[in-house]
Length: 349
Ligand code: NAP
Ligand code: ZN
Image 1 (cartoon, rainbow, N blue to C red):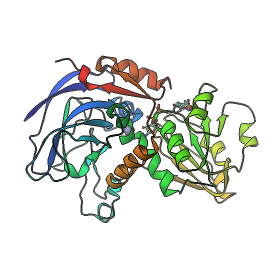
Image 2 (image 1 turned 135 degrees about the horizontal axis):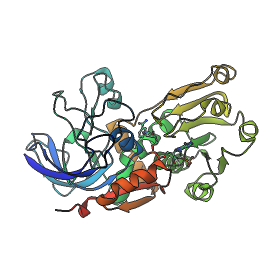
Image 3 (image 1 turned 90 degrees about the horizontal axis):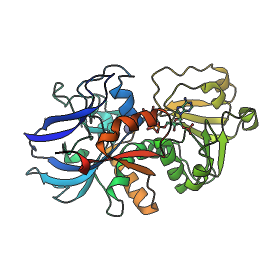
């Protein structure tokens, strides 16, 4: 076994603490990765605090992982020692269902294997994530990080980047399309940059005035402070696509009014409470309400290459592992510009 160290939540109500554990020895197709940086996604907080239910403890969170290949199993063909690589939200899937065969492995019919807070395909070995110094994964679930992307800034692309890239591509954001990103956090700010690079006209819907200048700098043409009086009336029937990245319960009904005829609101944010809506705003303009989860391995590679080509990177604040609990509090209060990334070199021996 390979000894690993990191930070774990041992219960939903206690802070994350230093934690030692073991990774499996590499199998034929496995890659051993020295983790250099790990992003903090709001999903880590939802799961470490068991806000969605069913969390597995002790839990080493982290599914925005960037590092360097330390060793490879005997049959690995895609990677070699020293390569820059990443891991996102899942590390395996059944590989045989219709969805896996169509490169939609994030929607594996048997369920993909989550990077942490899940079980290996054996159904009993818990998986542990990226707030650690080393990880072992099958080469087919490892991504290549283009050399032009620094590892610290590449990390958040593995979840925040792909979670916005996938719906933007699926719903064809591009020239002539008015796209609104609801919530300018870790996911939202990647959405603004990617949608702008795709040529869409981008608006940020944010619940305060604070991020107006940042939104414009990132590529948004318009910024709407949703707590201002009258904005929902003023902007009704405006957008072709709205992507909701908000991590908290909000009144969805008002946002549907902002969509044009036949337009779609895609939810990617997953608050701990249900989002209720009345049918009226949907039926009166034949609007659609949809959802999307991360992206496939193939699409994640496409997204990394797209970001490298267009020089798109997240705005990050790098922290020491000792600051993880403080960072969680700040994410909770929407006080992050715009993604915390943990520097794993600072893990104590
Ligand atoms: P984040 O960085 O905390 O951003 C969330 C944003 O939501 C905040 O920056 C804030 O934007 C807005 N917000 C927060 N509380 C609010 C409130 N009470 N009222 C109105 N707006 C509020 O979180 P994230 O890492 O981007 O993740 C966002 C959500 O997506 C989380 O629920 C996460 O679990 C989920 N997620 C889903 C997927 C998927 O595959 N579907 C993947 C990753 C994450 P403003 O200040 O601009 O209003
Ligand atoms: Zn995430």
